[in-house]
Image 1 (cartoon, rainbow, N blue to C red):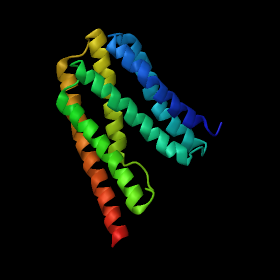
Image 2 (image 1 turned 180 degrees about the vertical axis):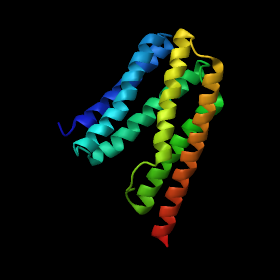
Image 3 (image 1 turned 180 degrees about the horizontal axis):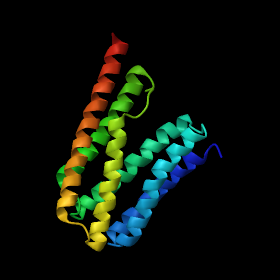
Image 4 (image 1 turned 60 degrees about the vertical axis):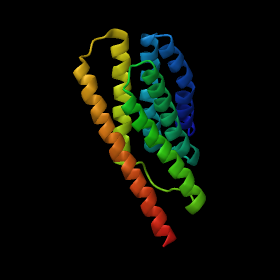
Length: 180
């Protein structure tokens, strides 16, 4: 049972391809169902790891990788289909690439990163997941006013920028403290 959170993260990674295929085929009901399962799994694996003390070093890497892979892939496909504005996808993907490269650079230059995800990052992930869910609902069922999606896109962009700059400040601060 101790490895259940990691198995759930692997399931989230395994769901990426079927979600992308469903989106590509405009099967929005299937894409919505699969994305909803993937979104719920994101909260479930973290809750299980904390609740039962099943956290592991692998899980600390696997969970954020699963999140990034899912969100980046869906953002890119939805943007390609004209469902998500380019400016939001550029910002979200650039943030995740910056965090990934910053993590690798820190690991190579100063050693392993120790710490927890920032609150702004958790809020950003929640908003990105919510935004994509609503985009898929809108694409498949057309029930939402565009103003709601536009407002959520702007709010998501704000959290992308805040969390991205927060991580940049954190990585830079840690590197300077360890170097000095």
